[in-house]
Length: 243
Image 1 (spheres, rainbow, N blue to C red):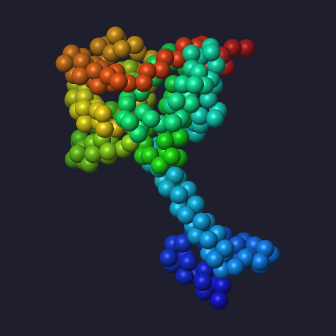
Image 2 (tube, rainbow, N blue to C red; image 1 turned 120 degrees about the vertical axis):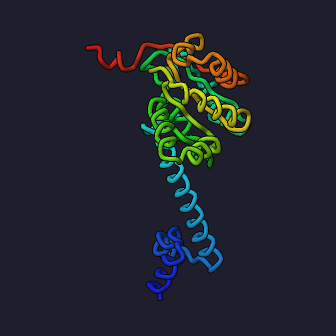
Image 3 (cartoon, rainbow, N blue to C red; image 1 turned 45 degrees about the horizontal axis):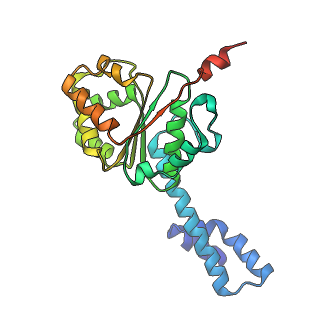
C-alpha cells in the first residue's frame, strides 16, 4: 500500500510529502503520533518543499554570476559600509517601498558582490530579481530587437521586483539602447526597484550616455529618492595580487 501511495503522491507532484514519508512514518511509530500529528508534519513538509523550489526557481531566473550572501559581506569602517547600513538594506524596504539603489566605487571593491547578495536575499524573501552585467544587458537589448521579441523582454524587465544592472560605464551606450534604458527606468520609477553598480561618478555619465536629454532623465530617475552607497577601499583584486 505504501508503494501505491508513493506513486499517487508522485503523480500529484507532492514531492515534499513523498521525500519525507518514510521518515515521518518512522517518527509517528516511535513517538506515538496520532493521525492529525502525522498529517500536519507531512503537509508542513510539502509546504516547505514548495517554498524551497520557488526560491530555487527565482535564483535560477535571476542569473547571478556569484553565490553571494549578506552573511559573508565585509562590513568594516575601511569600506565605508556599516553593519547598520547592511541591516537596513536587509529589510528590503527599497523593494517593498520601491526606491532605486546606486552603488558607487572603484573597480574591485565588492560592488558586484554587494548587489548580488542583496538580490539573492530578495529572492529568498519571495521577490523576483533579474541580474545583468551592463555589457551583456546591452547585447540582450540588441538581440531581442533583432529577433522581434523585444516587447516580451521589456515586459520581463519592467515587471520584476528588483532589476540589477552591474558595472555601468565600461563603454559608451549606443543611442537606441540609451532610449531603451531611459524608458525602462521610466516604467519602473516608483513602482519597482532598480539597482545600478558603477565605478563612474554621476558627473561622468555624460561620457557614456551621449544624449543629454536622455542622460538627464536617467540620472533624475536613478537618484531621486534613491539609496546611494559609496564604497571606498583598496581593491580586493589588488590586495590578492600583492605578494
